[in-house]
Length: 284
Image (cartoon, one colour):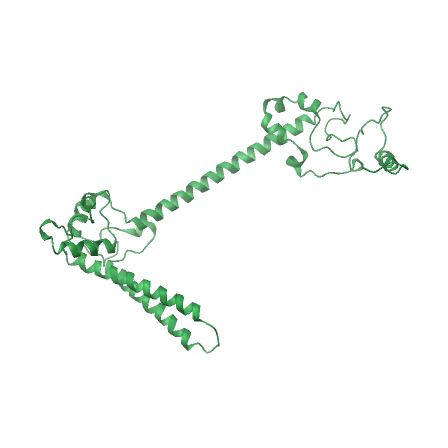
């Protein structure tokens, strides 16, 4: 921990944020940083008036003014809380009508709460405690400021989501592998419906590659029978970027026509073209 942190017997500055890669700072240093921020915002507003380029900066100036006002009020509250803490001002034990703050799950207060308790503590000094006393008693509980606790929870949640995404990706990869295996096994036998030989995709009656293998191939595949959900995904579209393609792009056995004789891809395409152009016949 930094050497400028209070090392008194009952220190106020015992929380060390350096474990999260942060530089430990005293409350006085926090107030100084806040005051510097207020001065910087005011300097920014002043620079708007000094800008030589003609611009309409009314909205920007109004927003900067509101930000400076809110920040100035915030820093003032922290500075008042610093004074109450470091002077060991008596703080009332209760926050309005709630349970005594010193007996709650967390004794870490906000600057506004400290200032409110300090204002009431001056009246009820007999029943008051100082912030130093309460923190010293709870120091062994490894108190973590809510801001840091929230940051750690958010980081842990992000890590958990990342792990979940990796798990989901692994499941999807395994499913895709199984889908490809099922499709390969279904296409490893001759299709009774379209007569294509093993290793070729099923074909439609119009001579195009079918998106899904025909039922006989599905029934012949033990993998498909055992993995019904994956088998529904075992399509040319899912497995390897399937898109409708003419039969002529494939080599091997062709579907048999009505006379049971296989024809060439060119002959089938020509027959389909003639069928669509017969007089009195409407193209579908």
